Image (cartoon, rainbow, N blue to C red; front, side):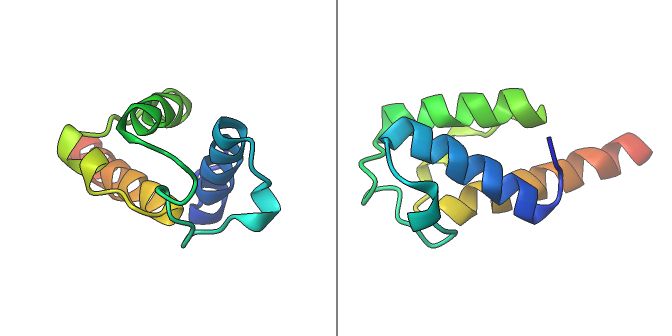
Length: 89
């Protein structure tokens, strides 16, 4: 499990491809979750996989604000930075 932004994006896109039976090489950070057919239930399931891989939880508000694949990694990076800063204090 890589923790760089690129590694997180790769994990998210790979997981999205598995969920949607899509081709990861055709997906990117700007890929619309709606265009992939990801509804709220699928997004919750996807979030569970991301949370298990990276140890950070999404709030319901964060989940409803997600519209593109790259936003998942962005939120995860922001959460991880807050958690890491809190751990250092």
